[in-house]
Image (cartoon, rainbow, N blue to C red; front, side, top):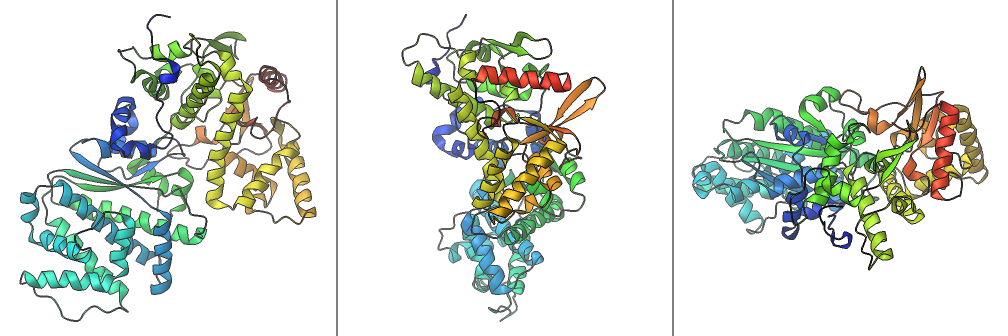
Length: 553
């Protein structure tokens, strides 16, 4: 097999959650495995404010890259919205009777406060002390926090919550410089007035600085809604955040006289981006966002960014240089079925594509499951490569299917309760083992399930309002695809594949045929309960018989 690579047991496949790569001990590994993709070039552009992608497509990883490295003269920082942040927002809303515009103003002050602290830590003292206004503001912040401010959203919210105290302290330090300030203008009952005063002085202070480095603040954690935070209140909070980010980037930071700029970037799932209520959202996504889409074709897989990323993960830790593709082919030397020709000629990577949603996290998960199962079975084995039987093994299919279902569960729980997720999961028993089905067969299974739920007095979640709503729900979550016929050809249309800058929310076709994702068969208990190899043969046979094609695309 040529070169000797690291034993499988010694491979370090990193983390599923890129936040771990912020830790100093993991930075070196992250920089080794990171690839500078076309997505990175778009993120670097001054007018890019949104990183949009499904869970597991690498949004946090790109932010971490800017945190760990000095890219384009830019200092990157990453802040996460936590459960306590939402709770504080809700408390502020009730206490001060706030609306959406107030939430926008609060977020502006929070962002100004965090950015100011980042500037104070990254710019030279000479640069900062040339600005009297910024020096005054920093002294006020130091007094308020007793010189212990940590640039986190929750701490910044405390500054907003006690807006009268904060405004009074800023005023005191302004007076110490001889600046004239109106007396007694702040009261506990004038939250909005106090907030506007604070916002104005942050803007004056930041505008007065000539930055020597660009500043990029990434805000993450938006796609996690705490269970005890009502959806409508969560949505109001993030709408305010999105409006604040858009306004700051376009109306304030971009117009700064400083040659170096500040920008704020939001990390969002596509469905959440659609909820923000931004005007001309498709144009904003195309002009001011980057859509993380790792789609490739079977034919061109070895030139795709996804393949290069996975190969780099294996290659970066080797003791010597390897050409692109060498590491992958070393660890996965076998071939798989080419469904178009019926011959065993395809690279093993094709089977990974079939079972994935074309996301980096899916591949890392598959590799890690295979590695752990290999170690458990081959402790002293001299063979240091995976076999097709490892990928076909029931243990692997089950574990990987559970991973995919856990990802889907997280997405559904963003909108629904644990009980409503269980209602979704129980539906698949009514498909009676089918892995593909017609529209009529779907409606039949749906109607039987609704009848069963009504008989047991189970409340119906909104996604079960009618058959077409549920069909779209299954499509949105990439559980099913619809099959489109074009003459003698047929194409499988997945939501994640159809999504684009101009079509952020693809619609499912009605009166079509539908198929369940390969990777979910085991988790949903679908297909014939036989060996994996016979199940796959049965699957191919069904598709060939019904559509005149195999599930190639």
